[in-house]
Image (cartoon, rainbow, N blue to C red; front, side):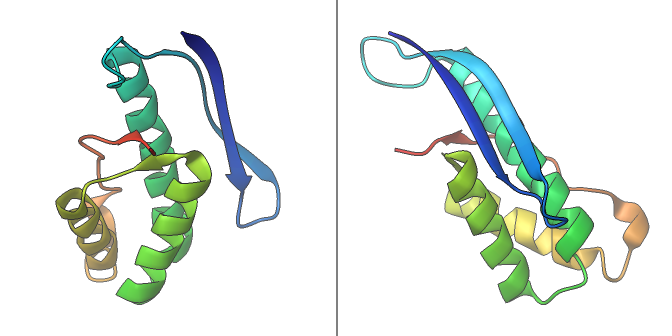
Length: 111
């Protein structure tokens, strides 16, 4: 079954921020196919980029909260190890701003 998936969440500046618009397909097993997986990872990367830009100077709890909020609003999730790594990498930018935004290796649509 095909579906259009559009997620937005409020940008910290108050403007809506479109995360992704993809045609998503689910195979007969109910597991995300490659297109859906890629769309989820792209949406999660957009959230990580935004949280990194606006929240890296905050404490880890604030970074994690904003990451959770953005991922939830985007309709995607990271596994716990990936989320922990991303939060640590964002937090590490306080000491090394040149390290850059962490890359999301894999996300999935929220169930």
